[in-house]
Image (tube, rainbow, N blue to C red):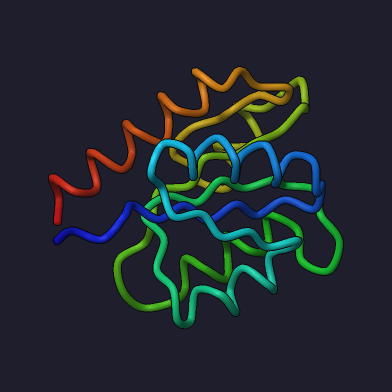
Length: 126
């Protein structure tokens, strides 16, 4: 039996975490949340996500620092989708080498489309 596709949500806003967890878990995804980049890195020592949904502006460790640190870890890296309300979202995503952007506020259909696209691509590459 295949394991559920795993999504890591790194965002310091509990309401955003809750919406994403409810939506994706309802579609059969396994979803884990982290309030900042340092917590996400700790989670990823034991749990490997298929996709990372990442806010950029967070306390403790922001998205930019998280990505720099994550990219230095050995092994295969999950695609990163930046979630931001910034008007220059694509520029910010390019700065960190993100795979896509999910503008806040987002529509659940847009969330599902991105997560499904990247989990399918990752499964084909495996």
